[in-house]
Every structure is written in structure tokens, then in C-alpha cells.
Image 1: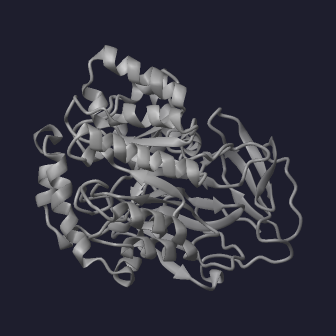
Image 2: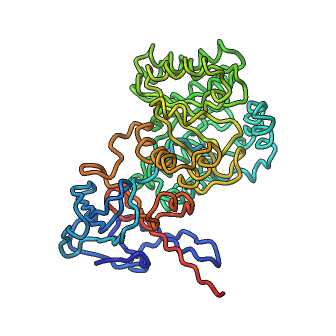
Length: 456
């Protein structure tokens, strides 16, 4: 069976395929369709992971056929040369781009769609005056967690993950607040949603003490309980503490726990308009002390964009020694990590959605193409070379930041793929549309058909 770009293709999934039909007359909505014959042909005869993508355009401009068997890319051959037996799912890419699926390297998943509970005050304080009041903004945002109940949060978390699938986001580093205000309610909602999509989306959960450790007695114990309940990564936010000594103790606690439990560590560091902040340096140094080389992620690190060059170069050298990766979110605040300088120096940098309609950011579709499009403007990354770097920071390089190697369109890689409507990278970023098809582990899990009727 075949499908052209204008025709959705159904797939035999144990989990519903998601489709969206978007027209100029209204916003497309996701729908769970248990009977995939409603959107395409229910295929039979072989394992559901068997798939051929015909005439897909790779980023090196080659047009090829991709053969997928048991969830793995098993062949990349000249276009129109791959053979497919009866019942094999076939996507006719017709020269459109095929990329790795997208990676969201930083999302506050428990907070999604909670902004109506709080209003704009925290947002205004967090982003105002060059982020001078970022700490106060976080303190104001704490109030929303007084409303946390796992059963109430679950629909929001589920919606964000579903939106991510629609937009081709199949790997997520999810920060979940664990503190004495929200307790473990956010964690339990996120773990429940993760279980629902475990065969589609890879969600790494970070036990994140948003309100500090020294400032919030009991948070450390809750984080350790979160790890026992299913969180994967030790989180931290040392700059939120009241002194450098407390910040260092915060970092030491997190890195010691990560080393003791054989986990990765991910922290929000230096997330304010204050050039004196040094918690990124603390994290890199602690990773070296605790033998966590290559197992740490520094998110935001916005204050580094204000550092004098000698200070910045010293930090970059230390970060290289520690194998520290970085995640930037330039669209959620007016101060940003110097992404291009870090990237040119060989430091792994990825982007994250960061927030979806919460106390810190009113927008967000869980579209990493949209994040990259915004970054292109905010970071002055507009050239053809820049566009490829932006795409790498939401696909292959972003995967490495999360500890996922080989997230590429090559033989032997897991078939987590997006087939787009665009043939050029510039169009892919300009349109930042949902992919035509999304493939997770060799299975078609989403399809979006965009049509416009002009009456001119």
C-alpha cells in the first residue's frame, strides 16, 4: 500500500495513530482514532515495524529509499530501488526532507498549561529588567503548586506529550518540581503520562528541587523518594540559594547522589541577569570530582552571556574537561547563553521548549522547529550553515546532550524519523509546521495534512 503526500497513511498500531487536518479556515485538532481505517488503510501481513520510505531527501541532499525492519533502519539505498513485499507500509516522500525526530532537551512538564491559575505577575517579574528579578519570579510562581493534584495535572501533561508527537518530538528531558509545596503530585502525573506513551516517546524525568534545597528543608528527601518512584535524573537549581556556600552544597548534594545511584545530573544554572553567578562552574567542577564526566547537563546558563570574555573562556575550558552539555532557551527570557560561541568551541548545545503556557511563558506548541525558528532570530543565526546547526541542536546533537547516541538517519539507527512537506531546510524552519508523518521505532504514529483553499 502507498500514500502520497496528500493522503494520510494508516498503520497497524496497538496504540492509536494521531492525525491532524489543518486548514486555513481553522486550527487542526488532534484526535485519537482507534480504528486507523478512518484515516488510511489498515495493512496486514508482516510486523507493524516494517516500513519503506521512498524518495526521501536527506540533509546532504541525497534522495534515497529507507528500509526499516523491527524498528531499525536496515538500508539506505538509491531512490526507487528498495523493494517491498506485500503488506509493507510505504511512505512516498517524493523528494521531501526526512530528518531524525526532534529532541526537547528541557521542558517543565508538570507546569504545562497552568498559566491561567496564576496570571502574568510571575512572568513580568521573571523576564523584566534584564531578568534581574528572576528569583522573585520563581518565588511568585510557587503559588501554582498549592493547586497541584496528580489527577488534575495528568490531562495537561498528556496534552503536551500528544502535541509533541504531532510535531515530531519523541525524546523529552522533563523537569518535574519536587518540593515541600507540590510534594510528589507533579511527579506522579508525569510518570502516569509517560507510562501511557512509553512505546512512542522517550521521557527522561528529572527530580527537580525548583525552590532550592537549603531554602526548602525536606526537598532533598523528596527528590530521593522521586528517584525511587521512577525519576531518572538528579536535578538541581543551585543559583536559587541565598549564598554561594549554599549553592555549592546544593551542587555537591546532587552530584554525590547522581554518582552514588549511577545517574545523570541536570541543573538549571545561572538563570538570571547577574554576571556574578558562577553555578555553571560549580557544576562542571563537581562533575570532575564525582567522576561524572560526560553525564551532566547545564540548562539556561543565561548569565554566561554577560560574562567578560576571559571568564567565559575559562568556564568553557572547564566545561570541556567535565564533558558538560548545555541547553539554551532564548525564547523564554531576554538573556541567553552564547550559543554560537559554545557551539564553535565544540561544546554540545541543544535547545528546549522550556515552558508551555505556564508562569514563565504564555505560548508553546511543543514544536522544536518553532523553538529553532525563534532562536534563529534571537541569536542572529540565519545563514544556511546556521540553519543546519539549528536543526542539529534539536535532533542529533540534542540527542547526544541527553545521552542518546546515533540519533541519525543511518543504517543501524533506531527509526525515529520525521517526513516533512518541505524539500529545503529554510522552508522547514520558516514554516515550522508539523511533519507530514512521524515515525517512532519504525511505526507511523502521527500524520498531519495541511491544506489551504484560496478563493481569489
